Image (cartoon, rainbow, N blue to C red; front, side, top):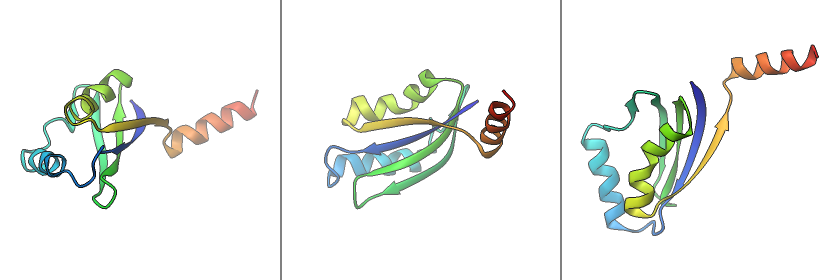
Length: 100
């Protein structure tokens, strides 16, 4: 699985609808935090800015979009999706490139 960091921002950080949606999602068992091809590793919520960060593993970008879609379409949240590497993947890549 590939790793991604998702940084999100709400259009209105003071929106009660936005805060309620997050609370309801968490209290509702976080149903989209893990499904075939996707696993949320960590969530950090920044209430003072109306955003946060997710660290996830996913088979592909489509799986990441499946997780973010209800938030971006339903609440107008913007999400920046940034691919990344684990420590081990980075070391393997660097050592492989240095052999070429």
